[in-house]
Every structure is written in structure tokens, then in C-alpha cells.
Length: 142
Image (tube, rainbow, N blue to C red; front, side):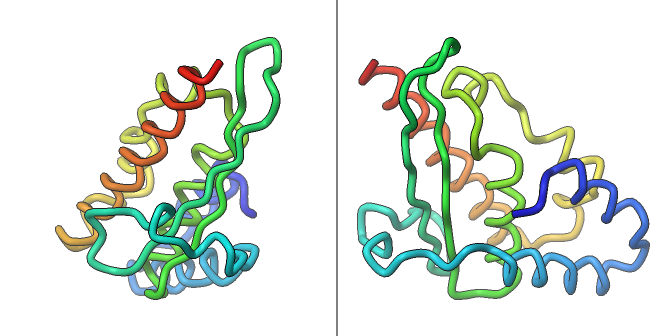
């Protein structure tokens, strides 16, 4: 999985949005395949026009609390790339860090919100809501 800093740097050198869409598709293709056992109704992200699954693994408490590792998939190529961006931003962080993280400056830096459809923007928001809900649940579970 690509690191968010690498994704930002790559977006910085790609001027054309057609090329950026191709890059998003490549990011999606590079995701680890989602296990069939994770393609459950419980892992489906509500509010996405495409099918999107996010599976969450909570790692044992560290000094800064539980960490969440996400995996995901979508049946739409560009949306799968957006899943890859979400995983690069949020996966592997502590629940507390996830709740305090505002991805909007990253989206602004790569002009994401300006170049995705309102439906895809709703899907991105739904993914963020789901990730944050999982982080709150991990904190509540202790």
C-alpha cells in the first residue's frame, strides 16, 4: 500500500486529471485483495453509490491506545483508488489519532474534492464516517 506522502508527491507531478484518474485506478489495483470473508454486509460502507467494503482490525493497545488497520475494496475502479487513499491516510494509526485527523488539507493539496463527482464525494465522506466510527468503537472497547 502506498504511503500518503508518496501519493501526494505523485499527484504533485501529474498535472492532467485524466492521468490522475488513471493513477487512482492504479492505486486501487495495488491494494491487497480483500478476503472473501471480509465481504460482509457488516463491512459494507453505507452511503456509497458503488459497493465498498472496509474491514477493520484493531491491534493490541500500544502506549497511545488501540491502533486500527483497515483493508478495503470496491467494485468500481476509481472508487477502489479512493479506498486506497483513505487507507493510506488512516490505516495503522491510533484510534485517538484517527479521530483527530482532518483529511481535508490532504484532499485540498491533491485537488480531490474539485475533481470527483458529488456521488463519489458522498462515498468518501461515508468512508471517513465509518473509519471514525470504528475508531470510537475501539476506544470504547478499551
